[in-house]
Image 1 (cartoon, rainbow, N blue to C red):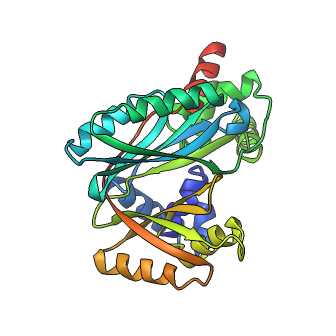
Image 2 (cartoon, rainbow, N blue to C red):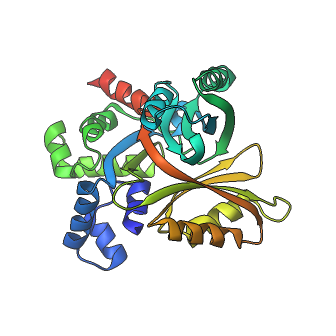
Length: 295
């Protein structure tokens, strides 16, 4: 659903903005979002600093295991590492995770942690190419506005004004600066396996002699707009890990078949999702600390 993609890009996008974009009433948009929340497709909302604000690198990792561990237990153990932001179990005893870190020492610590987990047989670490956002000086007033938004990122401006003692006009201006400055990300948290959706990762190799990673990544987003959730482009080899959802196994097979038809793609291997979980990120915790320091 396109609304999900919009809320992942900026969860503060208003009902009125979405109404104008899709040509339906604001009340209809509101009901659709409430349905997404009540069904568990949207599990919550979050605000994090951009990587540029914290100088953090990110990676996507795949763990191959012997399949002896309970999936939820294993995901929790992976998530116990302070660098891990999200982890998931996939078919054939495979686990995937997204992590963030500062420099080679923390990267080495993360790799050691993953390789020494019980039942792990092989670990792949892929630093991925992503948007760094921008640096921005957050004033005490910015942080004052962010305090109630950390509890509810979609809190209406009038409520933020009431909680901060600022005028609604000033709150609107400050939030606008935060949204446009590129220093923060306001995003919806999506439960990929909610309702009847079938999440999967497509491991995609392409011929880098014929196309750049941006050509492939842009094509995936455009071609599978309603199914696409995230794409991680490895910085070390021509491989993309694209997180997609399908309504059923038939649609999954058809999607993989369609990806294979791209003339620049040499192979596609799907992994079906079983269980996933989000964990608190360094960038989110750093923002909380900054807000606390001025409160």
